[in-house]
Amino acid sequence: MNKKEFFIFSFIALFGFSSQVFSQDKVIDQIIAIVGNNYILKSDIEGQFVQMEKTYNKEEDLKCVILEGLLHQSLLLHRADLDSVVVTDKEIDSQIERKIKMFISQAGSEKRLEESIGKTISEIKILLRESLKKQMLAEKMMDKLTGSIKVTPSEVRQFFKEMPSDSIPLVNEEIEYEQIVLYPTITEKEKLAVKAKLNELRERVLKGDKFSTLAVLYSEDAQSATKGGELGFLGRGDLVPEFSAVAFKLKDGEVSKIIETEFGFHIIQLIERRGEQINVRHILISPKVDPVSAVYCRSKLDSILKVIKADSIKFNKAAEKYSKDIETSLNGGLAVNPYTNNSRFDLEQLDATTSYWIKKLKDGETSNPFEFTDDKAKKCYKIVRLKARYPSHKANLTDDYQKIQEIAIAKKKQEIMTTWIEKEQKTTYVHIDNSYKNCNFTYKGWIK
Image 1: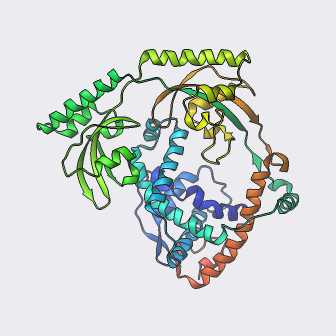
Image 2: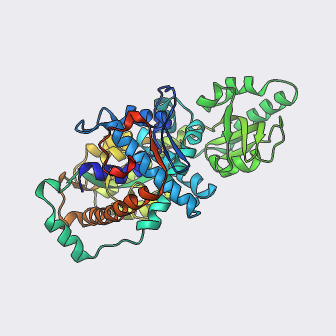
Image 3: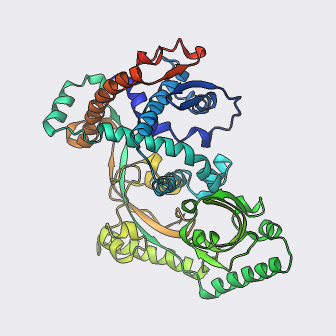
């Protein structure tokens, strides 16, 4: 499989959701292609082009490659519609949350993500929704066609044996790490103080003060505060459950009582309801951690570190005993990569703070305690141990069997998809604008 074919095959999974979120350019729209009842717009191509032009190999016309990826996606969407393939709102909501969590992890914090994109988390979710729905429908249709494809160990070995030397992939440096995490406590006195402040603000609204003005002055949600606390139209799955349960019961203009979520305490005002979506304002105040507890956490980690270095307890046993991060403590502190669901990470997949400390460690070494903000914007302290470092290398069957197996399966799926695309092209209405008629498409049947 050549580079162009592989790019088209993986295009949907890698780039299908990103252009609307990350492209800031305004494009005068026009229809570039029609596949069945699906339209491909100029903005769809231009948005992805802006993101990819700096890194793409110039041997091919990038816009033509992008268009063919979208044609492929549209063909899958057309067949999905004919075959009554659907994705539920729950599935879309779950995928949005997973994507946002990955983006936050890469950016280092929710605030950094919002600053780098220039949009609030709520706005990013709205922009992701439609493109993610198309991506998921296309993926589900593709899975219907190729999901049962498997390869045996002997097929994997034979596939690797027949791979040209210059086609064997280079595996980036990867690491495995363990962590012990402690969260400073928030005192009841601090929680009561926050509630008292929010009750005061709620009473002021009920007596006639503008909710939006108070949000600007007091809300700690920096992005929405500048807009008077307004979040924009969102569905139930776009909001954390505690927030959603209260917000969707409000009447127009009504102000909620105080609710608690993982981000802190809120009061909410309903602005407008449109079907299954609502637009609300909120004021968020997050209780501050107890300074004494913060000092205790760092000191406690220092003590745990000394015991580990004295070899009185193994790191994984200490993680099981002391760490407050439920996901990793049950696994002896071993972190799991959300991108791959295994324990190996490319350093670029880590948040900036953890990556900084990991880079300083040798195999088996443990970091000093450091402050960290988790993906729920909660302050914590942790120590990390570099369990293993896997240098960059050419893939081999001993260390990278899973990666080679995935490539072998992808090749087999590509062969099936090639046959399917060529067949569907003959029976599906496809029209491409004259400005793209000279593209050197991999599948010649697009031009009729």
